[in-house]
Length: 87
Length: 238
View (cartoon, one colour):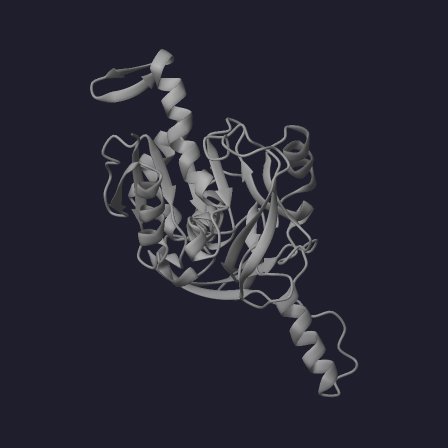
């Protein structure tokens, strides 16, 4: 078993209105950052977990996202394991 | 007199009012703690409003895995009436007992104010004493009340008349199709964002919410006479 650090990025579904992202976008424009386009805002979780392989760590994290960390109705998620990116 | 279990989660804050509302309607209402696994022969289960687990992660996301929810799910799957109010509605969506989800209000602000809703479906255990099309004044108090659902399920909700209440005059939170409350395919699980337990008597600003609780009693009173028998101390529809 080795330890893995898994980062979970949870984002609101692209089709859904993201009022928090919009509010940040407007604030950035108000501060003069006029080149900023669309801003979307989500959550970032960092998990430390034990697994035999990187694949197993990924599978565990995916199961956690499907059950608890992300709501499939309203959110999408990405996983990063020790630097590797995988969906 | 029906036995009504009001579930209490850490962070529930409308539990006492909900219990009082059920008792005012004549029910034998009692609290059930979220760690309990036994609903104590409840005829009806109510998940009250509040901020279970501080709304951490997502509203209702953690409460949905509390021990008592296994019993609530069994009760719901067996056709038992379940009402989720506000945070209770969010928990039912997270638990998959109702479709869709509730996310941050479109204009971000936490809203605590009266709203007006139209009763569109009266064939549920919680609306049978209303007239179809009746407009009620019931307050909301939520930050995450925008109902979202995929287009296919939205069309299904419309086609099968499962939208129980819709906001009229204005849509406070940006909910799809002005949805304030829905029911499941069986018509026994109902979720509502506004708080009917806060409109039980003229002294509290109106009594438009009272029939939600009186409906539970009325419905059982008529049904149980002919088609329900007690088996092992449980009421079974036969």
